[in-house]
Length: 500
Image 1: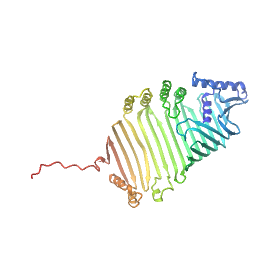
Image 2: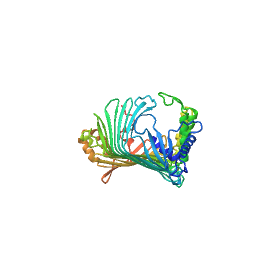
Image 3: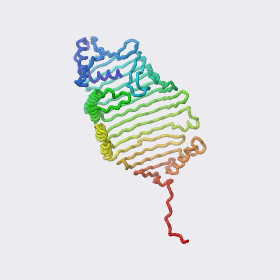
Image 4: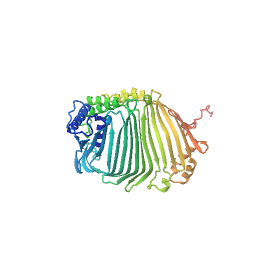
């Protein structure tokens, strides 16, 4: 978004300009604009000829006024540019206030031709926005915390292309973020965003409309230990990569190979990812989610959680995903079937044990010129040489009618054909579910599975337990080898020949 781009420029670029707050005139504004241009030229490199800067900076006695024209507007209500007030603070910091965009506008965006008319070609966009309250305090030297506050209300957005029409409405959108320096010379980034009253309606190819709505959406994000030098290297390599790409790389059906200069920049981007950050976490929750397709039915969730995270202590990767659902319901199913929809689902899969340096080498080798796929084999084998890669289920919980299941598990892969895994599952209410399946026609297909699970279970008070272990292809449940179930019976040993 242009708003984020403007604020990011101010965050990274603004110098500690020495004008007094009551003595900002044309000379100071021109000097600041030239400093921004010089910084951008240094970022993109000497081979790129910069056009005239799209923004305009003027002195307004006690502050600067930054104006960023929005190109391509078909029509607008009032101002056709984004504006912001910029004031120098003590310690080289800056205050950005009164960030405003047009209250209503329409424009046409041309999307590169991908061969799919539903996603490529011209797209018409129209929006209106009511409340706007955006401001920030920024330290270009990143020696003190920088903060950003965005509060937008009553936002409507409509998009149209060859095959799709979409309308969205948001009652309010609130974001607070902060960038704080650490004693180790790195940066911690935090973000807290809340969206209320979101509604969306989409119609594809003139077919049935699909409506999605949510009462509240909340996102919490955190990135710890950002390495500024690595980020700068990534930005520089990314800019150089786009300059080196062939003109037809985005065209329909293009099979253009990356030229050597572009491939070199891609490798620099991969290398810059090493030690770029210490950890990342993001969790998004949705309350009151509803989805409906006209003439087909819909579903509702009282609460949805989706999250992921990653860290690499000691250079070993650990990543995970979180998925949680509460209050799942749908009027599209008969009541006797809907009663067995899970009302609670929680699962957290994870992966750990792989060295990030091994992943980097694999990615670098994958970007080498040539079609020899065999060169990847040593890199893939190296991923498993530090104790193996571990795939885990750190959390598993769900209900099914009267039954409730909880469990954990992990599998350690030490080579493509060797692994060891263990899992522990407990359940309550399985006998009640089996009894109901005997008389409910919609559940009778699951009856053989329920009976088999009950036969393998080990009672533990009011619960049933399954301890599962696997070494290579063999799997045991509570000590019972599953390969012996349903197999051919041992053939009798041949006896002495019979006399005739």
